Image (tube, rainbow, N blue to C red; front, side):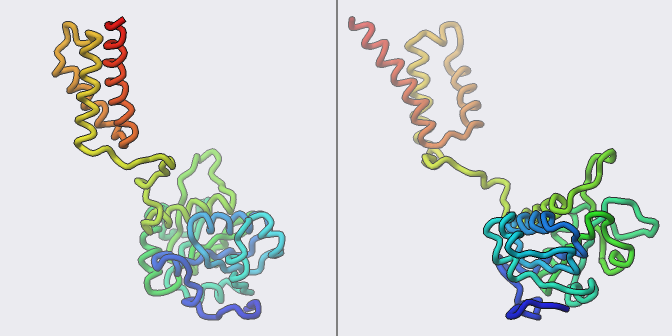
Length: 265
């Protein structure tokens, strides 16, 4: 095994980030293209993974890699280099390989989404690895023999092959979601978001809206109660924040004020 000076030999010392993902390791077996390596590192950074192991890369240039995957110096500098796959996986408590083509031998196949929580659970006790093979031919049967299972990413059967970095990103994304870091309910909010409207603010909004609609004879032959119940259902579904509820209320108030001014003229 060839290790850069100052790098640790203890896989447990590679832990970074949250406790759930610190022991997750991405292993590249004989990667052939430096751009693909950089793409893998970028995918790792996107999804909070920091531990990379590389087995006999055809090329490795830290300066060029960080030039492609910006601000990835930490992953590049801590990457561990090996001369054999067995050495790279020797301390791993679970290894999941990846493959896009059918094999003669039966393997423990599973969807990437199914393997993610199992890898995270295994990572609580030691390094758990996601293994990727060469871009041109994937993992050999000998490499797959070292795996506990094989992760499958569903794709169009007419064009099933994924780029190395694409496959890595999808696996890392599933791990990110399973770890709880990527909460799908936590979507970005605008800088002016003022928090959810309170019950009192919602009631003020409905009263102002009803008053404005009444002033323009909107209800006419319609039942105000039935119309407002529909508006309540619609606006509750929208889940307005405080600013949005205030804006709807302002519409109702302004209608009333406008008509009051018009009648005075």
